[in-house]
Length: 586
Image 1 (cartoon, helix red, strand yellow):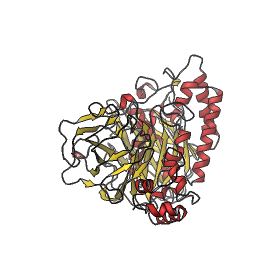
Image 2 (cartoon, helix red, strand yellow):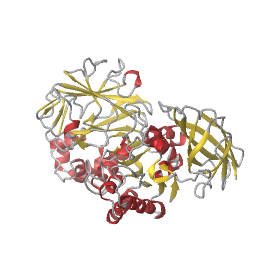
Image 3 (tube, helix red, strand yellow):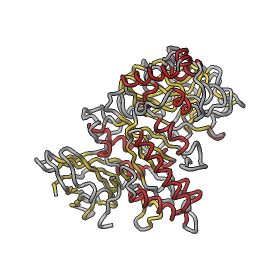
Image 4 (cartoon, helix red, strand yellow):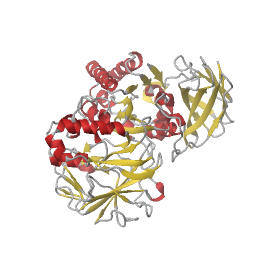
């Protein structure tokens, strides 16, 4: 078990069943149970056509076991990986489409819905997931298309001319998604690079005849609604903007067997409350950008399965993490890693020794089930909430948080620990978030705080022998600056990147890579320009704050085999653009 993020600062026709390749004991009925609100249902011809889109419905109805075997065999030939996800939720009244797109129980009649999503790992073949898991009526999609957004931007209402391409389901341009179901499109041949935004446009002629619809309210991305069929229009006139995603829940990319996804199970702190609308600067976004900067991890997709207000045990918004684990983790394609960063809403609503014990039991369940599926499980400590509505005068909620965090750090149950508490807590008042990272509600992080979390995740956690070393096109948001040193034989090299910057401050990360021989310790020298200082660091032991600063390995990240890497990071004041680094084996 590895603990990361806790360095001390010394001076202060698609194979739809591919997700189940790891366990051949799952048959068709089990898969549908997951996709249909966890209720076991028979596979009818209509259901098979809606979900599979490619398999013969008659074959599935007549011989479900044979069909399941055939689909499993087909899954072995291809490898689908979740490259973008959004956790499906029942839409609250305040997040419904505004009039005239909601009229009583009729939603989006004669309406074009245009949305942008940011894929992680790119490719040349994709498939789209449309979701009606919380719908109160069937979801009739008249037509769908994908395109490149105008300017390549998230939240753009326009598309680039000539890039629109139809999406089909079982060879048909339209589909009616049953109540409680998810539909997966036919494979779509379209080349989209890693980190690019993609526009998904849907047209609903009759709309959905229910006030209960499926969405992801916390999209932090602007979508557009307009009357009439404007599926492939390059511009939308008089469109209504809403900051929600409706009906879309995933995009898979066809990739080599080496490519894999990391699923992040979380709440509003992962969903990005406090991040920038259309900025794609949630902490999983920042982690993804760092993964893209190294060829060894450029084929790691990031699937954000978080929602504001979500809880692990009970209550909260949407299905609890325990209830949705099958759907949102095991049900995703190509998953190799899991990060669990959730529990603050459980502790904030009823923090007690009993709640702490129940959370720990839930984490053990996640770990056991992930391992059974061949997935490595990483746990993140719960960040402070002192002074927020989650705090209590008696201190019971904080005591429960400390109990849970202590277990995460010391139990050795997770394969690695991301000590997010250490990264963002205020050194002078550890019950609270550092003021520079606080949105003001003392619970959620701002852009700098999310950048710090993203910079604190070592890319080496995903640099395994199954990850390819061939480069992938770089992220659309490269680091603002970077420097690197060259390794001496048997020594080490260091590369430096500014992960985020603002007026008067920045967050930076450093990757240390061993040379041609094993090393058992390292020391990085950072040369800071005048006016720049280190104020907080993680994953390394720091000496000095200004001028020449040294960062040395901790007890858990000093030994590196040839070519292996370790990462550390820090927050600084001033400008991070002129920092230079060098590395020496200790």
